[in-house]
Image (cartoon, rainbow, N blue to C red; front, side, top):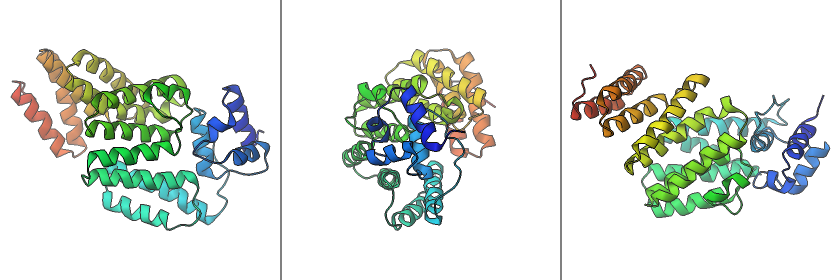
Length: 299
């Protein structure tokens, strides 16, 4: 049976990735060397980040090294869940709790800064300041970043989420073309370098939502439909339905813009009923209002 270090080293060597590339922003070069040689056991969060950069679904981790490690790991996932669900007060409370712990690993320090930037974004702080702060977060684990170099990096899921949020920060700051370029590059990275299709699908379909919004604003409605079809197919194939209604609505919207209202009705109606089943009353109203404005009767 392969040890943890052997699993990491085998995958790294197979993909011709250097130790420096793999560990940047996660752990030190000396740490990755000791981990691969079996002289040091990585924490669970370090192990997951390394395996994600290798495009692999992390194997079951044998144990936590301490109660502190278990607590920090749980807080990490609770913070991400609170941010995804929009529970900002709880997210801030959890971030404060994590930050109060001493000698945190790099992954946790980056998470804290990332979460604080997202909270500032939700509070409506100046977009230019948010953009600079998000660039600093990305620089902690992505060296010499630009959208045309994404494929040359090895990235974890956390890195990819940071890049999605960096794209949003660019868009909010008025740099819309840059935002679109980043999301297209992240999309391509996932398609070409991440083998855990099931695990990455929620992220993949989630990034298609803003991407189709933004290119729809540029009038590229045929491209919107193509991207929505990709996302809808993935949602169904892997049972990842968080972005399903949004993609259905965006496809219906694009079809209306192309004067294909009969075809659009199906997607708008499906989006409406999914949102209603989820209790998203405001999104239901958006579906109904848009349909009515364009002479489409949904109910």
